[in-house]
Image 1 (spheres, rainbow, N blue to C red):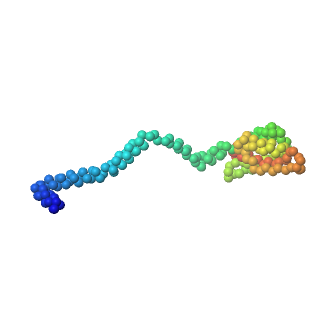
Image 2: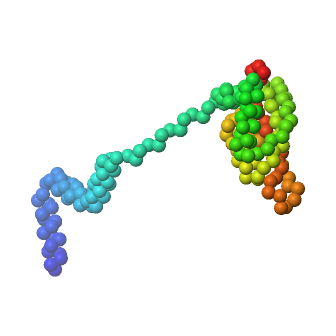
Image 3: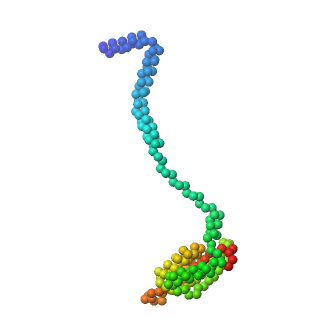
Length: 186
């Protein structure tokens, strides 16, 4: 009976209360319930805001330096022609080759020289075939020094020969090409 009495009292109380006041009370209770339900979400949002503030306070890592633009094909072509040797300097370059051979203790015999004119590339390829006699290591050092001393030269071919196993020295044939600007006069 107690449950029935409780329901009766609740009904009588509701009959005495103004419906507008009841609505306001119900809305207040619903608002309070929503606020209580949103407390965990609010705490998570505050934690996220704090993490964002902390991230904003930390300095950014240094930005990598942007790479320079690669040269255009016209710039590459101009650089190529600027690195070609001068035809009038071939004798001086050959003297430098012979001086390097002497510095490495190599015997150079008379070489073969041939110039070819490549009109399409607008350059002259000056081929030098050199018979060389000396130690294997000295010949390689000589070849590398020639390439360092004359940047517009290429080492196209190297052939080694030894007559017998017991022989200390070897004979080699080096084929070098000097690339020269077509426009320069001999």
